[in-house]
Length: 295
Image 1 (cartoon, rainbow, N blue to C red):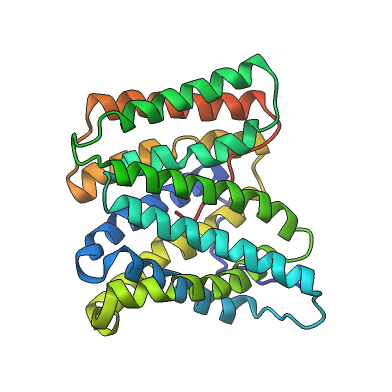
Image 2: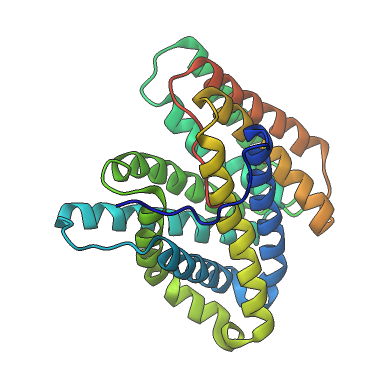
């Protein structure tokens, strides 16, 4: 099945590096605005509406069909969608207890773990050590600058879900188109986060203000990044893609400062440097790439 692009902007004249950085920035600005809505609908409510709106738009655009699919393929794309939705939900729950830069820095250990999994090279041990040092540094600052232990745990759950999403994405990609898989997967995922959405969001889920704000989050965190990444990936090497994705924790920290007024502490800066260095090093010396996230 041929999947139509989400939109057809005239991006041929725009360097793919700029497009990918735009996608990263859009995701983190969306996360910052999502944080502002938690007081009204809770992380679960915001995650539910974001996934719902994204799934509805993708279903209209991609028009996927399960006709002719085997049960194995349906189970696979369902698991893919559940991993993606669980990543979004647990990340938002973590974000309710952590500054944005801290949450993204810890979550980024998920794809890094996939990139170096099974390796016995000394260099990869170095990258894992650097990343682990960054996470431990943040975790030991529990209670300081809005860093709560439960938030660190939830961010590690999000990291694990991101790792699972990457592994499942590779398998799903052999049977489904990118947007088709996302449309079907996020439809499955909507059911996963529905109970938490109702419990945490309650009647706020019917508020025009909350609905409009969550639609904006869906556009910033999902629809715009998906489109820019799809366009950029056609013109970027794996190494350059992974290297550019490595700056995402720094972009997240900056979004937290600009949009949410959060502090950029010395501890966070050191942890950012450690994790970004680990990610960039693993990308430049390894086999894989840091996969895009819907965080």
